[in-house]
Image (cartoon, rainbow, N blue to C red):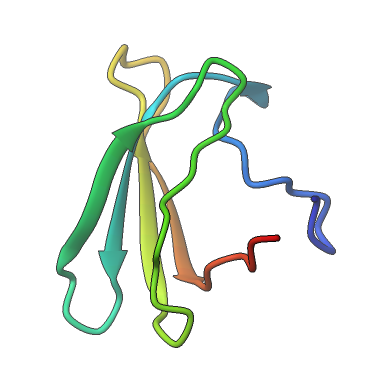
Length: 80
């Protein structure tokens, strides 16, 4: 579901959904919580994140097409 900025949370390379390495860190400690690869459609998911925590998410394009993208002050989406 897109947020108010129209972002649906998928990873994108040059604004096209794509596969990247995603690292999720606890913002307060910078402890690595999860590292994973997004799906071909850019979707990714980390289960059981603490809803009270704030996270930093970094997406790395391992093929070197674009620089890493950082999203700060990320809160987990509520799951159905």
